[in-house]
Image 1 (tube, rainbow, N blue to C red):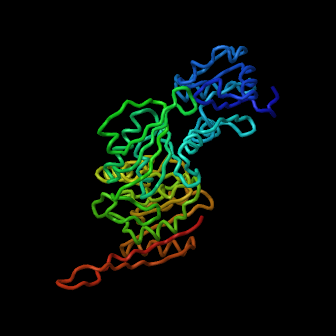
Image 2 (cartoon, rainbow, N blue to C red):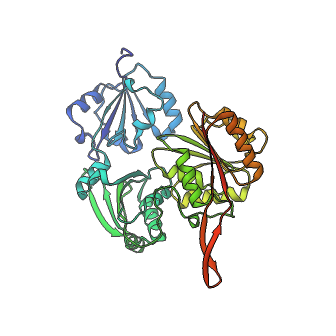
Image 3 (tube, helix red, strand yellow):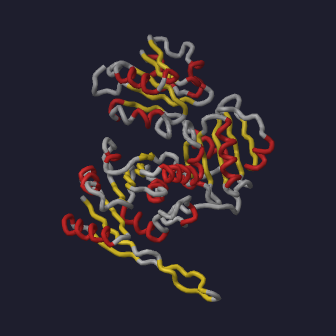
Length: 406
């Protein structure tokens, strides 16, 4: 097979197995020399691939199977997947290791499309997420009044975990629709409130898609930067809401950007950077174990369990980390070598934002501005607070903020 032609074909299959494939998909499958399948699809292969001389399964582990797959370049390989392989599927994962021209994707309707068709939900107005093989805490960032959510699941247990998150947030009245085996002979649609699901504990199929319509008057957190300080568990070392909103505006999150949050405290900046969506990633670096525990709790509660946390003191803890697109230094700007390590690690074109509340820190930022340019500003925030029987202004510590592009 010429290397200018795709050697790897991904075929999306519906719940009805081979019956869900069209003629072109069947023809490719029949010619396959090597097959890669998931555990759920092994049973459908009888007679469908007469030329197959080897079958790999993801059950052997992702990395070993991927390594074996990459050694087969130039051989006709077919990967069987479910639905649309490029929508939270194996195709999106393989694309990190294989060039687009090497792959041909023949999708079937995704679980999101099938569910939306059955529910009458316009997909462009629905949050589409995956809880398959991921923490159910990802749901938390999408729990908003009136929000509609479609979620891929790992199994029946995921549905109950999602219901628990909703009830804990005061959204127990939310409508849950469990869509089992869509497109197959065993298709079944079941509807509950989150509270009823937990109370009744019905038997559910492991192969399901979950639809949620959020209803309730519980706690929720807007997707915009500047969450209330009370949204975070902290020990006082917290970038306050108003300053945080300005800081995030200077960090300028963009699709797939990686942030280093150096001296992360309770993790508020890194968490809000992730909540911006856009596939953003973040690493929080914090040396105090008790604050690391706070970061972990806050990340779970606010729907960003994918936040990577490094326990250690910068700059030593920064060694070996993937180079960032964006850096925030919330503490330690006066530490020897910290800025230099961050600036050297920052990708060309990347942004660095540093905040300081001490005179020494402010002097350091002024000096860095003289060397690297950028913008220097000072924020003063006052909040109304009781003064006896009256109300007066209570000033927060002024914050000096420096932002620069490398």
